[in-house]
Length: 210
Image 1 (cartoon, rainbow, N blue to C red):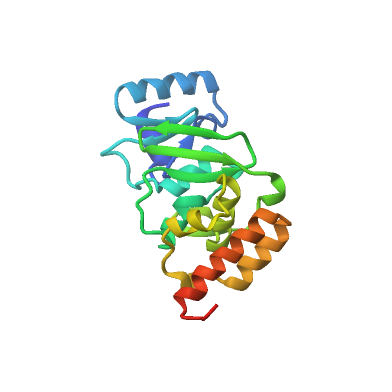
Image 2 (image 1 turned 60 degrees about the horizontal axis):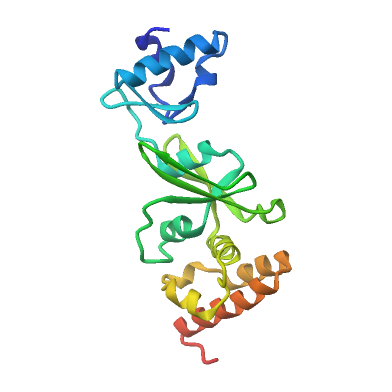
């Protein structure tokens, strides 16, 4: 495959796989050519088998959440990254945090660091498909589920101190009814305590006397 043919095929894609390019062609030969283009700085190898065009050939800048979903297909963005995206916590989150039914893994790439936490299949819900930019969308936890995931995966995450230290803001985005429904769905005593503490903070922000 010539580079001009590659550009015609992937110019409008944020990222692509070697298998996608090898449809109808010899995969080892395609991998060899891709390695040459990476060395020539025409391509960026994001991770095993996943590539994006290098500047100035790239038309579309890959969205980090989109890349996260593509690094592990059985995953969705959650935890601190989702909370920051919704504006629920004030901190900048330097890495993309996701949950996955697969093995936990931290992946360092030329375009950022991606951290995947393992979650049981019984808790793999509460996310939505969100359009980030034209042509790029990602599975992202709903605000209530991002909180649930963070509490569940953090030792002593149900404690008042931990929840206070999150410095939750823009609390009108949190649906208290949905938060409690999510908690009840997990049947977790830890999450029952955590939701009580979260609701206490929300009520305080709304000026409700406890």
